[in-house]
Image (tube, rainbow, N blue to C red; front, side, top):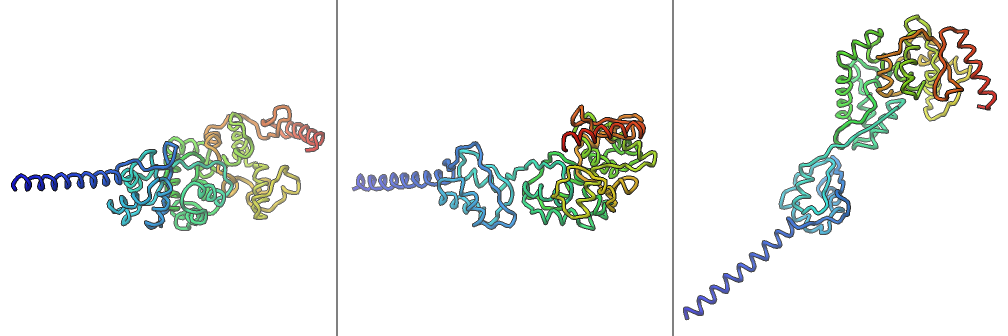
Amino acid sequence: MKSNYKKVILGIVLLGLVIMGVFAYNVWAVLFAPNTNFETDTYEVFIPSDADYNEAFLIIADAVENRDDLHTTAVKKKYHENVKSGRFLIKKGSSNNDIINTVRSQNMPIKVTFNNQERLENLAGRIADQIEPDSLALLNAMRDPEFLNKNGLDANTALSIYLPNSYETYWNTTAAGFRDKMLAYHQQFWNKERRAKAAKQDLTPTEVYTLASIVQKETAKVDEMPRVAGVYLNRLSRGIKLDADPTVIYAKKKSENDFDQQIKQVLYKHLEIDNPYNTYKYSSLPPGPIVTPDLTAVNAVLNPEKHNYLYFVADVENFGYHKFAKTLAQHNRNAAAYRRWIAKNNR
């Protein structure tokens, strides 16, 4: 009897161990077995700020083989009660435990880039393609009167705090958060040394940015930018109107509220456009930048070439560059040669 009793007890114990082993294996399989369905090294997941668990789960679930096990793990780890927004990178071969840990705590930054944008509207649209806030939210944040007033800006100069570059931020940053980050970079850029260089040219940082925007539009040649900047600084110092063609084009677009139009050539009639951005009609700098200039253009204004040139016109013998002149007579000869080339080539 005792022998049979021991056998029964042993059998029960063994059966319990088997059941426990199976249970433990199933738990391990649910939590720690690989559960991804993609071949790339990582799978990018974007969870919106207002997403509930159901929405977040469906987004994450596109990366896995077994959705039921993913859900079980999410509930065990209470992710369903605390969804996090952001950009997350799920690694190939990740377990459900790895995946939930990732989307719960590993919001990854992104690189946001922008270059030469003519208006806040264009900039907002460019940024909206890269982060969560839409263009309207970004535009409202950029135009916020309290923000502008606090930082000595207005509707014309608001664009001047945005320096074209590549910036690290989070995909789910708010519109105001992105704007404030750009302001911080702007303030960091305008250090004591650069402010001193601006003052040496008798310009404020905002005025440097505005002049750099004109230089940006005048030449795409980086090595020519300091010379072009020098021309405009010479004209400013002598009280001569800038007579910058890019400002005329901008004035026309702004007057007609049509920034999609393509203007290949400035005509004499355009020079009479009554708009403060038209530097053929109004003296000094325009009210604000006409584009977000590259840092090379900003640096060209801060470090201009020293010379006595007051004029320049496109060089038909060296395309992309310009011919510079110290006198109006010399400039008129250069301009006449350019007009003859235009006529000859039906431009």
